[in-house]
Length: 458
Ligand code: UDX
Ligand code: ADP
Image 1 (tube, helix red, strand yellow):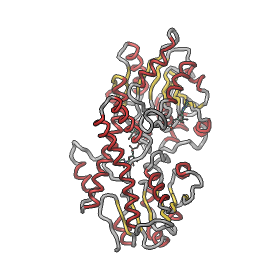
Image 2 (cartoon, helix red, strand yellow):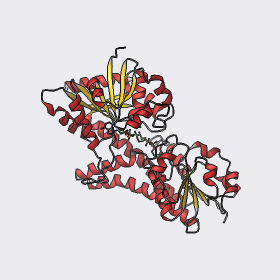
Image 3 (cartoon, rainbow, N blue to C red):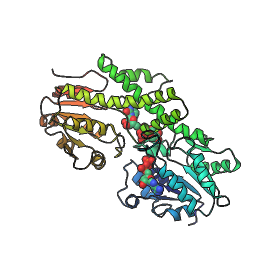
Image 4 (cartoon, rainbow, N blue to C red):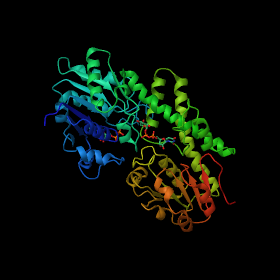
């Protein structure tokens, strides 16, 4: 079959994988190829066990793989043959040198840009899909178009707003698709081409065109606003625990104000995920670079509050468990940063477990999808860390359960059976407020939700 267009995506991760699978699904006349430097990951994409867990993803991949959706490691050929190149390689926070701990590490991005330049023999549209600091597109444009008379590269920014666990839904029915391009005839033509890809299934009025820098900044700001809501309600949860207010009732009451809205007001042990922390710290770095110290401090507080919420959670566990957890087994219910994903990047469970291990507790982690990642995050064979696929096994002989992830599976467990197998007094610290607290209390547990009165037997 001859294809109308050829799309390449460099980086077959949580963003590139689902996004390309949906584009292939919706555009049978477009050839979509994903490449990655990680050969193991590509092999997994070509197998029955995809490298990431995402509801609905298996079906979409299996339906299109080998027809117009391909996974390979042959990046140079992929580049040479494509019209549009999405770049969705990782951009972690820098761990060294200038901007360490705040700025994005752009070495993978720059390497990719140089590879595109080397392997291209025809004009390309290069689309930034990874979250990048504002004005990265401009730098990319300069690297790519430094070749004088060679092919022309038009750089666009098309930030991804999908959330893990709902990636396929978010891609199929997005609130908006944002594409930013240069205000030149070539820039506008490239925007038309990219818009046509999405227009196969997204209504045109939901496809927004901006200049490149607005698109880049909008991504950072969207994540900063979302994270700021979570930190705000978490700050309120601390106050609720000191008063007799209930954070769920407060969130419900304020969420009914249409100006505020009900979403992203669930108090929790803290937000995690690959984006929020990284993007906010990036925003903080950019503000500082522009001499905006107060603006930087404002956004930095969102991250500081998130760290505090996790530390507060552990401090409460220790103080309620008679000021020591040393030698006590704690069952960690969930390690993923949210339900319906196996991803554990920046998961609050990591910080919570590390604290508990410092206090010489034994942590027994259970999670339906994230045990492999959990083992990697805490280091393999770390003393004091045990894993159990079965939550009943994890709780056996434990002094406490700490709920870290809002997996539905945890709500359906037989807590009488769990209680009977635990040390007494038995504690539940529900970092997601998902369990039936009154019922647990009746069984005999001492229950500590987030942002509401504890239910205890003392
Ligand atoms: C986020 C953005 O939502 C998405 O648009 C962007 O593209 C990537 O970053 P993601 O990190 O996958 O997506 O998950 P999200 O649903 O935003 O949750 C982030 C964290 O906040 C999770 O740890 C979640 O548990 C937590 N959270 C979310 C709360 O604690 N309370 C809430 O009310 C909402
Ligand atoms: P995200 O959540 O942003 O998708 P991931 O870490 O899941 O982040 O995916 C990024 C992918 O990009 C990884 O699979 C990584 O191996 C890949 N990658 C990084 N650098 C390159 C490169 N130069 N060429 C191809 N793939 C790359």
